[in-house]
Length: 246
Image 1 (cartoon, rainbow, N blue to C red):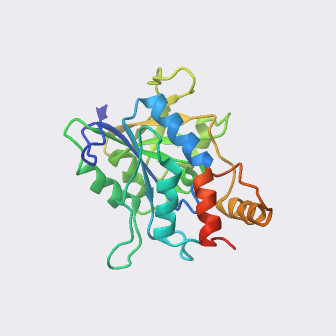
Image 2: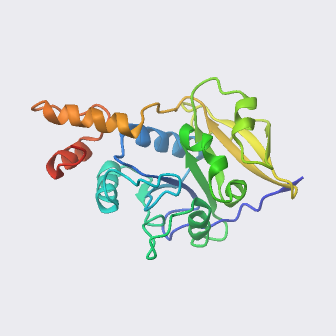
């Protein structure tokens, strides 16, 4: 079995074990923070890079808030959080073309030290749409996948969600560095004989859609002197002061 070369890339000063966490962050919420903290603890990550996306190919209607607003909210959401940082790797392109995750991951990898390891952190919804992404079968070999899921996922469910041409098997043991976070380990294989680690965080699925959160925010804003139990306070205050999601 030929294992994927673990040498990857990362932004200067971010450490050697880095997870790319892309998404709309429209808005960033406490579920995003919980997933990032758990992944960092479980896999001994130096940095989780929160990367608001400019244009998602599978969301032609775009985001409710513009990129600069989502970037500002993301900065506020992670302010003071150890090991969390904002990345502009998935910012809007000068041509206006969609952002493709594989291309972004390769760009991030190119900036990592020679002995660095790059991971790609996904929520459950993102993982189940993975097979529809641009050159999706190559993504796990550009960055090791970490997927936050609901409890009880079976191997058959993971297998059914994988891009065509990939297979999966359970791997012995786990690399968890934090006893408080459950981690399951697998190996992905492609038709070229390459293998890549795959990690599951089985108790971290955040089953709240962005549209539901925006509805919640609208209701909270209309109630005087209230905040939001789903958002960091600084993010909620930004949304209210800038009149977003009304």
